Image 1 (cartoon, rainbow, N blue to C red):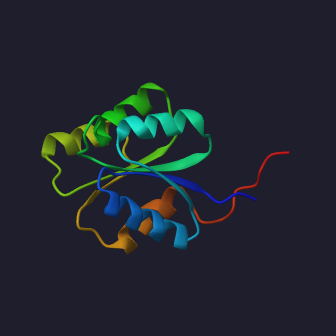
Image 2: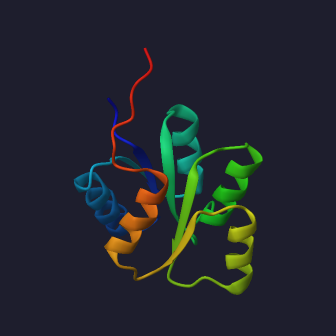
Length: 129
C-alpha cells in the first residue's frame, strides 16, 4: 500500500517545511519544491502525486504558471493554490484552469487539510501488481 502523495511548492522554506511536516503528520507522503520550475522537474521524475499545493507568487515560475503548464500537459493532478494576496484576475484564471481550491494566507491548517482530503483521502492507495 502507498500513501497519497502531495507535492508542496513554496519559495519560502519555512512555509514549505511547515506545510510538509503538517501533511506528513496527517497521513500523506510529501515532497517539496522551491518554485514552479523545480516542481515541474519533480513531477517529470516521479509519478503518483495526487495533489500539488503551490504558492501563487514565486520566482522563476509562479503557481499560476505551473497550473497552466500542467493543464497543457493534460495533467490530472488536483492543484491547490495559496497566496497572501489573490487578485480578481488571478482568481478567475485559476478557476478557469481548474484549480481545486484557492487558499488565502494566513489560512487555518484545518482548511488546508479539508481541501486536500476532498481530492486525496488518507486511505492508502493499492499498488498495482
